[in-house]
Amino acid sequence: MSAESPAAGFPYRLIATDLDGTLLRSDDSVSPRTRDALAAATAAGAAHIVVTGRAAPWTRHILDDLGYTGLAVCGQGAQVYDAGAHRLLTSVTLDRQLASVALAKIEAEVGPLYLAASQDGLDGEVLVGPGYAVTGAVPATPFTDASDLWTAPLNKIYIQHPTLGDDDLAEAARQAAGGFVGVAMAGAGIVEVLPLGLSKATGLSIAARRLGLKAADTIAFGDMPNDIPMFAWASRGVAMANAHEELRAVADEVTASHEEDGIALVLERLLG
Image 1 (cartoon, rainbow, N blue to C red):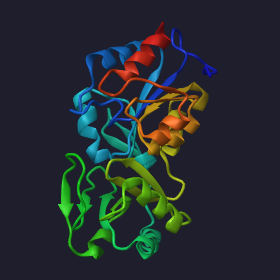
Image 2 (image 1 turned 90 degrees about the horizontal axis):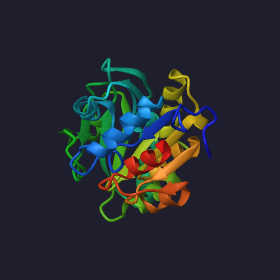
Image 3 (image 1 turned 90 degrees about the vertical axis):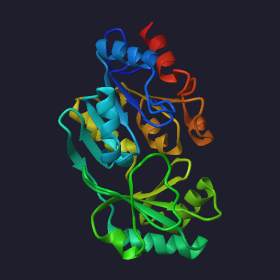
Image 4 (image 1 turned 180 degrees about the vertical axis):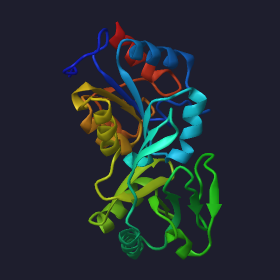
């Protein structure tokens, strides 16, 4: 389905890309071919917005390295970040009382969880409790007393389980606490508890409005189930070849992997 208001030479006015497993290769770089394709699309009048599950503190250094100065949606939609000005424009926090109730309900069903949490703000830390296995190179601050989890505003809580896999844990969490919080599976070992109703689509719609754009103008690229709401919101959703089967099932198209210039292949075709 084409956009209602195509940019000259390109059928969409907004390109929304996830970071990990989508725009970024495994070494956290963006290929020259993908950079060139994005530059050509933006030269044709489209805007590019990064939409990531990473909170702003763990996104801004990547954006700085890429020379990215536009808006970015961070923290699973909780934050709209102005990369050029290095400031948060919006930030949604998790109700800590509801989150505590939700965790208790989940643990009542599946047993004790390993926990981590992302604090709000540009200087917020990632707090990591005993047993939680940190994925990637996110700087982490350990805690041993569970009460330390609730001392400052949070964007999200991460949960892991000693035996349940990610998909099973996410489904169990939704069944136990879906009336209190949102649950997203954002990557291997990354199951997140979020404010109810929050998703990448929430943040992307806010950022798009700031640019005077809308869903019909948007093509989105992603790789994980947390990208499903963004695909539902956008005019077209493109899954990477390395994407989770749940996202591939709802995508309008599947392109090559993040290691094989999947974004560039689609943009080059659309640019003609």
